[in-house]
Image 1 (cartoon, rainbow, N blue to C red):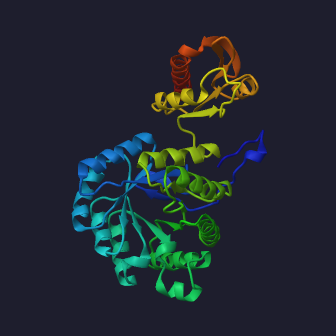
Image 2: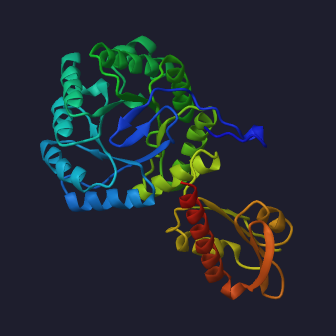
Length: 373
C-alpha cells in the first residue's frame, strides 16, 4: 500500500486479495507488487534462455515466464529452473500434457488458458499435477481466445465475457479444492482490459496479474501499458504485472518498474527527474541523462536524482531529491546534496562527479538500512 500522511492525495489503497506463493515470491495480500517478464528465446536453447532469465532478474524481475510448447521444451525447462535465480512460470497452451510435464520439471507456476487447453477432465489433471508438485496456477483469460459459447452468447469479446470466462475456470479450480491461483483478463485494447479487470476485481478475491497483452513496440507499448496498468494500479487493482512489449524482456522489466515507481508502489534504483531541455539549459540535458541512465544501472538502492538545465525549476526540484545538479552559467552548475546547495561543478566533469555522489549516497542509505535491521 502506498500511504502518505503528509500528502494524502498521493495515497493508493490496494484491493484486498488472498496471497499465494510463486516459488518463494509472495503474490497478493500485502506483498509488494511483483514484476514479471517472459523470455523470447527458444526454450530448447537452454543457454540462451537462462542468459535471458538472468538478465531479466538482474534488471529487477521477480518472476520470469517461459513458453513450453512441446515435449522437448518440457525437458529443457528442468535445467532452466535449476539455473534460474527467480521463480519460473511455465506458459502452457493447447496441450494439457505440457502442464503436467512443467509441474514435474519444477515450474513454480503454470500459466494456463483454459479456453484452449481442453475439456474439464484435462484441466483437472493439470490441477492434480500442480498440487502434487507445490505449483501455483495462473488462469490466463485472453480476449483473443475466448471460449466459443461465450462468443456466441455475447457476440464479441467484451468485459462481461472475459469475467465470465475467468469465473468459470476459477470454479473448476475451487471445485477441486485448489486455491493457489491468480487470474488475468488481458486484451490488447486498453478500454476492454481495464473494464474486464475492474469486473474480475469485484467478483473474486484472487490475486490479479495485470497486463495489456500484445501492447506493441517499445514506445507505443510502453504508452498503452502505462495508461492501462497505471490507471488500474492507481485504483488499487493488481498484485503482479507484466508489460508486454515487442522488445527485449529487460525493457519490459524497466518499464514495469518505472510504472510502479511513478505511483510510489515499488522503489528500486535511481529515479531520475529531468527537464526536457530548452534554450535556457546550461548544459546538454538530454545527452547527460542518457549517459547517467547507463552509468547508474548498477545502483539498486532506491534514491532520487534531479538533472535540471537551468535555475527556473532546478533548485526547487533539488529540494526533493537525494542528489541534484542544476545548470548555471560560465560552463558550470550547482550540485545539491540532500536538497541543499553544496558546491559548484564544471559541466565537463559533472557526469563522473554525479555518478560518484550517487554511489556515495547509495552506500550511506544501504548502511543505514543494515543498521536499522
